[in-house]
Amino acid sequence: MGSKYILGIDQSTQATKAILVGRDGKVAARCGLPHSQIVNDEGWVEHDPEEIWKNTLEVIRKLKEEMNLTADDIECISICNQRETACIWERESGKPVYNAVVWQCSRGKAISARLEEEGRAPEVKSRTGMQLSPYFSAAKIAWILENVPGAKEKNDAGQLCIGTMDAFLVYRLTGGAEFKTDYSNAARTQLFNIKTLSWDETLCGWFGVNPACLPEVADSDGLYGETDAEGIFDRKVPIRGVMGDSNGALYGEDCRKPGMVKATYGTGSSIMMNIGTEPIIGENPGTVTSIAWGLNGTVEYVLEGNINYSAAVVRWLEKDLHLIENAGETSKLAYEANPADTTYIVPAFSGLGSPYWDNDAEGMVCGMTRVTGKAEFVRAALDCIDYQITDILKIMEETANVKVEELHTDGGATRNTYLMQFQSDIMNCAVTASQEEEVSLLGPVFAAGLYTGFFEDVSGFVEKTAYAPLMAEDIREAKLAGWKKAVARCLYKI
Image 1 (tube, one colour):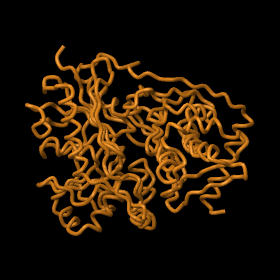
Image 2 (cartoon, one colour):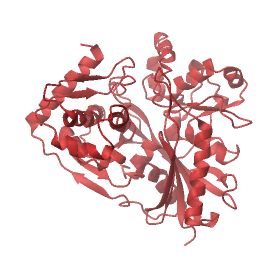
Image 3 (tube, rainbow, N blue to C red):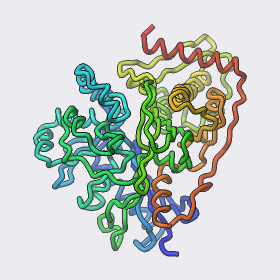
Image 4 (cartoon, rainbow, N blue to C red):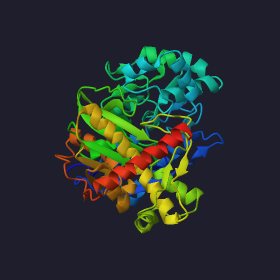
């Protein structure tokens, strides 16, 4: 039978995890380590790449020891990663010139505003499928180059490696031998032309990035070099299969046909619709067009919308407001809430992302009455996640001229029965919730395994729980109207 496992590495916003996946598609073992969230008074968010690198080696080492692994047991190593987070390191030493600027961080808004004033926005969208925004990597990269001493000069001289966290891990795992990223990650930088499938020199010029500092773009099921993980294994094993986490979830959820849709409930949420091999660039700024993946020489596209605060809203209830002890309490509290309560929370803690794209929006709570209590407030925090996702799904339906009949969901929050039922109710569609928490990582693992023959077929590997809409139409319409009113107050400060 050959190798026993594919080793997957998930470098996410909160932690770095490693898993072993057997030929039955099940996770045989897992290990994770959190890393520091570096947040300043302005709300800027950073990660220490060196801490992430040390954690990556440590989770691999722990799995090896726990399962008594040798290199012969490993078919390959696959990677999924937090997208848009920008990292710049010295090509020769591999050392970062600055902390990684996290996807949540909006410090690049002045750079985006400058390009907007120069009239660049329409061309940015035409080339990348995405509206000009500090959400994507390019403005974060430009900020580092403009503000870190020596970075611009090294960029101009071609002495830097500029990429996303997958490229950083590939570089370090291979000892600097390979500097590669996949199509799904490249497409989210706002430096990659999704039509020509290449780094765009015009965009690079606007953001001040030397194209020579950018990684080679490879298929998502492609070969990314070999590694012994700095001697953890007795010989090198191949790195094969790389995807951004949200794209990995789309693949892992088996949404591989046009019209299929998934939503990932993580720190933020990514909503994706598979649209096939031709890009559809819509007029509505609520969604963007991006690349799903490149597999065996074929590139496929998606419509995507992102919200900044999904499960992060629940962490806010727990860590900052101390309303709950843990996320597991929220479903029960939400069911206990007064059905007539009209509290809405708009979680614009660092501006509003898709579909509103207002970097200056501020969070808001409205609609409270004297009877609003803890349960009602917790329910409103859950509801705002589903409202934001529904906003994006409605735009996707219009852009692709496709009715969403079923929404595939993944992420830890899918265990929250209230959240999943309300999502089904407010969107008025079926919801199938993945019961596998590592589905984002299973995407590149499945793709790599199919390419190498480790798997014959991966359909049906991921178990799901089904939900159907139960809410009356008049109640649904009233709730949606209340949400729209709350968002308008947030955007227009009324």
